[in-house]
Length: 73
Image 1: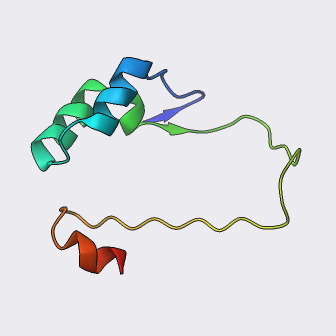
Image 2: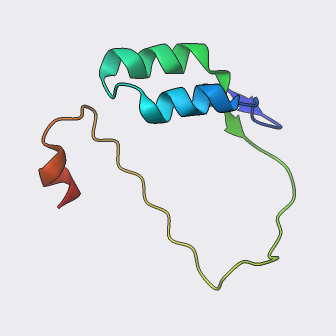
């Protein structure tokens, strides 16, 4: 869902995600309960204040947390 601003995620929810189980069922439970996890923030204004000369972004959806050591390598 595209939104002008992401829905706030309370600190207790953030902590629960950080400290909780890292399995598929837990992930799905968080995804269903926390609206921001299904949102994409659009709009706003850009700012170069404090920005460096470049930015590298990488994302890799590994699907399941299997063979984590090999993935890290």
